[in-house]
Length: 597
Image 1: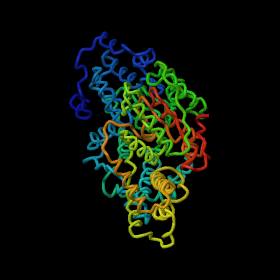
Image 2: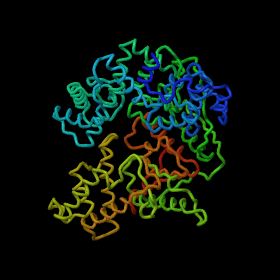
Image 3: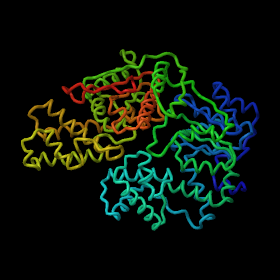
Image 4: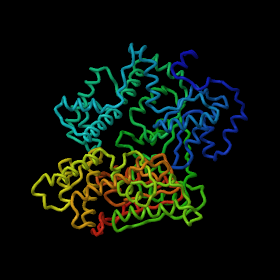
């Protein structure tokens, strides 16, 4: 490939050899690395597998590795492709590489790297323009469902779309979906044969309209590289060295693409931690990481276990949590060793009920953000997080923090009162309050019964739906409103449905104040890759952690890893809490999660 074509194909920040590297330049990159990180940075030949625990400086190790290779003249910047899973992680990697003098290296997500290759090679491989990329496939899935005479509400639509995405990244064709989903133990949101039909119709609609989706970008790139050896050779001449971050999260399809990029070579460095595999529901699997040495018997394996993030007390709890784990990932767990000075022991708090847990958490946060000179902890609000298992749990904490005048921000979800199902429920309750109950039999019923009746028409049921996904999320939101009505009625005897609606409006208004510098409220999944000085892990009861629909040993072990991810987000202060009953005055029948035994 000529220099001209290579820059068209993969635009470079700088050209190879843009500055003269000297060995001393290269050695300067190694300054400040610990012995294991240094081993990662200097292992530049053959396959390398870095098993990196939480907080052990994996991004530092791999960016210094690339920069060392570039500055020592071993790697040409234009020949290195670093891939990770989010645009945020790729951007951070590019920024670090620029600072280290390796700005010409490409750091991208799998999709972004594949899309560039597809756009470049499509005219040669297929002819014409690349088909238009559909940003949001939901509308097409809805149309496919309608053609199959299947009615899906907004949440079912999201879940069926998720099943189609899972099928594609696991390379499952429509007709095989029912069998493969059953074998994988997936809780299908609808009848599996029905989903298979919708999936097949969706694929036909895309073909008819000449459009592709996000997963097709990977599938088509794989197809081009498989069917056109000349194009595969061209890509392999361009990219001769690969680095893959978060390797425990690769899907079978991403691994297939990586294999095609590599060809017969083994110039590959992968980084991951099987104990942080928490996305298997999307098709991610740690098997590629765990089988790496089988596929590459001569690979250099380096373990990063020095934890620079968390205190010895937090690390001790994290290690203890995994010491009880089972399964393949557990066999490869890393025993972390904290490099920080001692801090406070993790705090455990049992509360009588959920509102008390939220209020107690808000009170403790208030103390932590109070300036030191006033007897507080002096921790900025932005360095504190409250983490929970499902997004519907946020409402109590939004309310408790607002009441305590603590600013907060939600990550990865809308505020509770801005969620579509909550807004819709509010409108229905307002209508019922204005016109009296729609059901005459409920005219004299108590507030909770009226609310259950109104929300029952929108999908609330006394028992939660099976499985996870959008339908479950919607149910959790509606169930939170039912619980709110029960608590309100208990605290305000004689109140009417109109009084409840007024209370909901007040709460919504109190939580709409825009906040910038605030405590982070997030689900455990949304917290992956982040860290804070103080972390509150809340709602840690059986049924929520592990969640009720985690039935198999594999699913329960994934829940344990999710809690492990939560624990390892904390730098210094860590509080784990649970409520013995749901509502004030309720029976104290709940037990804390088995993972803390």
